[in-house]
Amino acid sequence: MAEASGIETIKAVVEAKKSLPGALLPILHDIQDALGHVPSEAVPVIAAALNLSRAEVHGVISYYHHFRQHPAGHHVLRVCRAEACQSLGSEALADHAKATLGCDFHETTADGSFTLEPAYCLGQCACGPAMLIDDSEVHARLTPEKFDAIVAAKRGAE
Ligand code: FES
Image 1 (cartoon, helix red, strand yellow):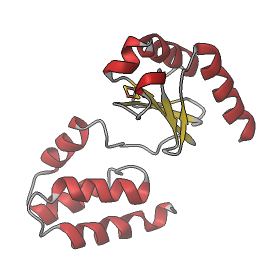
Image 2 (cartoon, rainbow, N blue to C red):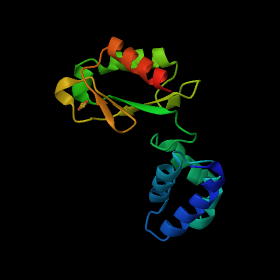
Image 3 (spheres, rainbow, N blue to C red):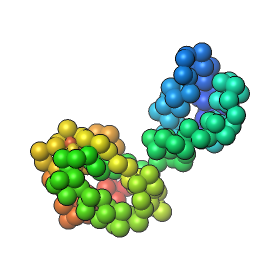
């Protein structure tokens, strides 16, 4: 979505949801769904509409890792960290992913290609470790080699 329309989108979402009980989280979800992240310019608009301080709104955005404060990379990699995948080596895979990408969970690679996020069960428990790419592509029984091949293929396709 074009950046110029961001503030209009934010205002429209706030207007539509501000009367709901507990409106803050639904507003943040809708803004992130529409824009891919919650831009800093959303904070004063939300604070004014909900009669909160900017610090309170910012505190909630920071508390929930789900909310991105910056645009995501071209691809979002969600590595499952739930129990079944952990027993099948997901922590080692996560360490490999971080080292390979040069970023931690909730961060984006320097070239903007990948954002690394944790997931908590992708419905592939018997064949972990599992990873979801761009909310549409599930990979199971991952190894460091498979991970590297997937990342290389995505980079090559850009
Ligand atoms: S625990 Fe990883 S897919 Fe279920």
